[in-house]
Image (cartoon, rainbow, N blue to C red; front, side, top):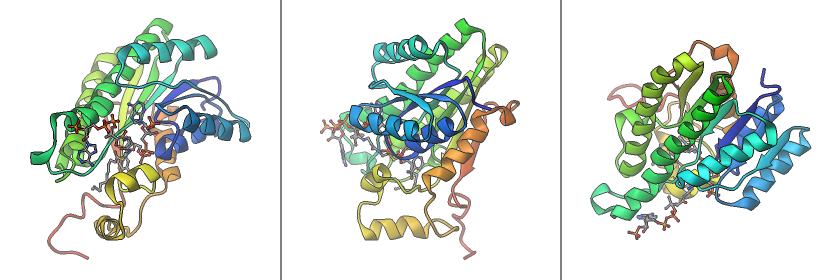
Length: 256
Ligand SMILES: CCCCCCCCC/C=C/C(=O)SCCNC(=O)CCNC(=O)[C@H](O)C(C)(C)COP(=O)(O)OP(=O)(O)OC[C@H]1O[C@@H](n2cnc3c(N)ncnc32)[C@H](O)[C@@H]1OP(=O)(O)O
Ligand SMILES: NC(=O)C1=CN([C@@H]2O[C@H](COP(=O)(O)OP(=O)(O)OC[C@H]3O[C@@H](n4cnc5c(N)ncnc54)[C@H](OP(=O)(O)O)[C@@H]3O)[C@@H](O)[C@H]2O)C=CC1
């Protein structure tokens, strides 16, 4: 389903982004992985190579719109076209909003919201030039709609990405470009572990909020991502697929 198609995956050097990149590669796609740390991207490209897939690393800071345009140019230069984008890059940490510095707010909003817009804009322009249509997936979190104490920067930015997705899904549908989100629940990655559940107490607290009683594995998020990105979801746009072990629905008084 993904053969002869090229996808850009931001934050493709680790965690969920790497899992999506590897799943796309296994499904036949050419994969352009990007992020700030070249070594992590090179590791993903090596793993793609081990599974017989084609990928390149283009280190980019998604907060820089000029660098994002250059990223898309590099992808087109190498593979001839771009058919998909995964907005996965993010930053996060736990801090009460009242104590958050303007720069702390900006650090997260710049990566998550502004970076996703710059990437979406650049890729959509390329798809318009190609006349091919395409598929854009953004990784958000359910606190985009229910909020979450301690992560006001990330919750607000993810909410912005959801609104961006719904808005551009309508604007770009006539061009054959679909935009959707996925909202994973707590997923076992080093980045999220360090940022959000760094000690055993915090980890147990997060786990106790998940009715399914476990963290997600990044490959589960990748499987759902491929469904949304691919042709089996060809009439789906402006939507968000939640896979969180029941976490956000589980905030009830009675029950388990
Ligand atoms: C719980 C839910 C579970 C349950 C819910 C489960 C759903 C989870 C959904 C989402 C999960 C994720 O996103 S997990 C993704 C986690 N991955 C990452 O975070 C990887 C990338 N992270 C980063 O690069 C950094 O952590 C980040 C700070 C965001 C950006 O780095 P930069 O180098 O650009 O920024 P810095 O210069 O270090 O810092 C910028 C400002 O931020 C402030 N800052 C940095 N860390 C801070 C901290 N811990 N507390 C206060 N303030 C902080 C600094 O003091 C600076 O402000 P001044 O001092 O004023 O200058
Ligand atoms: N794990 C979880 O529980 C959940 C995660 N998510 C979302 O899933 C996505 C992946 O998170 P996860 O894999 O857990 O965490 P990671 O920390 O592993 O992934 C974040 C990635 O973003 C990249 N990144 C950060 N800043 C920038 C930047 N300025 N420019 C380019 N790339 C950048 C990082 O690479 P580098 O630092 O090298 O630039 C890293 O590869 C995020 O969008 C996150 O919000 C959503 C719900 C739950």
